[in-house]
Image 1 (cartoon, rainbow, N blue to C red):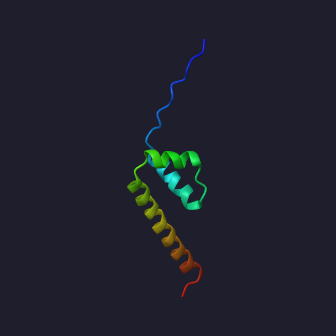
Image 2 (cartoon, rainbow, N blue to C red; image 1 turned 90 degrees about the vertical axis):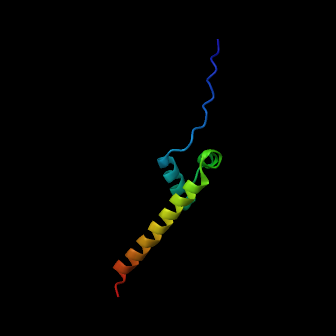
Image 3 (tube, rainbow, N blue to C red; image 1 turned 45 degrees about the horizontal axis):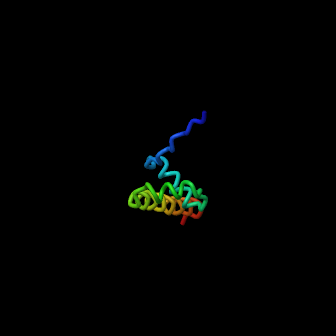
Length: 72
């Protein structure tokens, strides 16, 4: 007797899933499985907004580090 496992319905990505996906994409190490989930079930506006926030934070961090290392 063989039991068939019900196919799991792909669920909408949670907030932390989106954050991890954006960070992985920024570093260029996004897995194909997560990329497919993001493209099929995610809201593009959320990914763009979170990506923009991380890019701004990255640029501000670079500015702060440069000002700290090379004051003047």
